[in-house]
Length: 460
Image (tube, rainbow, N blue to C red; front, top):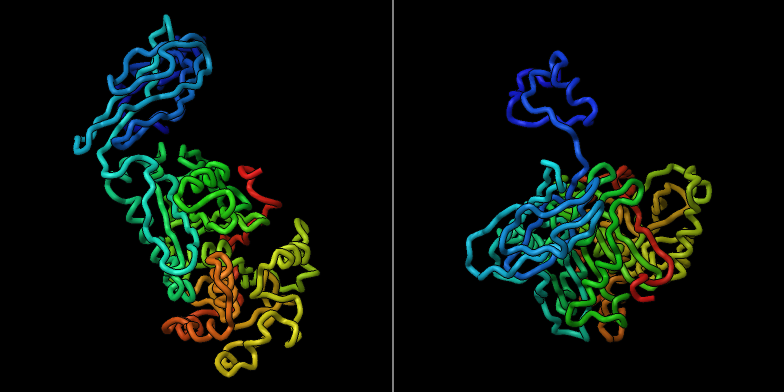
């Protein structure tokens, strides 16, 4: 009964060639006006979009035999006009004059000697910037400059031509800096983006495929991943990013998705790609919370998670898939996770100097719970951005971030100078303590950072 009420004369039903006649006479199926033999002829992807710039796109044609191009727009060219079986093709889309109306057409592929075709739709839109054009959003006015590269993935040419992409990139920049200490130290940063056109809109999941610029996809157990080499190679095109400072340059990728699940992929040399979707969850799990936690907290600050999933000691973790103590100590050996400790001894935690400082002692102490465990891990304050994304970094987290800014900017860190410039940040602490539970928000869609060995393979 699946086709009840569906007009049966405006589409074809494809079946194996050997049973076409049987379908044509079978009760129910004989109501369909077009029943034909299925052939293997598929173009992947089946669409290509572009802005004004002359560009190339990669297509793969799966064919059961010989094929040829039956027709195509005159502003498109292909590396081959005929071939046999599976073939990789390069589609070249010609430059379109600025100010032009959008143009669209179809490339029609046909199996030779058979009346069987498949199509690839091609559309080109007008836009003020070229594809892959680099845009400097901010230049530093203090220090030597610290690099931030904001990129989007899964934004197609139509969305980019409407201004959606650049609008999102600028909004993400403002979200990143809308928390202390980044707000105070913003002048130290060089900020870039570039017009990264994806063939399709959206990003893939474990059940769906999307053809995107950096192949960003949601994947079970890892949160988000992409073609890391492609993303880092793209970042290396930015004016002040080079192989020598890539490990001090944060790449922030915004997938064109409203799902919450952000994650930070990190390398032991300090390189990082923070994936920050445009979450539509309410405060504090909104897109602002995602970027401040994943990019500002993990990617740049090298801070550890403070949320709790297991009501267990860390060395008696019920998870058998990994050794959390070993992972914790590895991050510590890299000089990371200053906001966490495996000891609760007051004079051995990294934030000892804050505990009895009357400028911080009202909020800084020793609280048990963090790094997903209720016992055996200690944090410095009741709640922070590294727990559930509230708009507040703890004092030790702010200090760790400032130390890193000073290091990358070529300046000397001073605790007295830090205190002089330090701000807790509006009423966000009081808001968090009023509205949120402390250190107990376990969410199945939060992922700890993944730390890869060594450095990105593009640098090897």
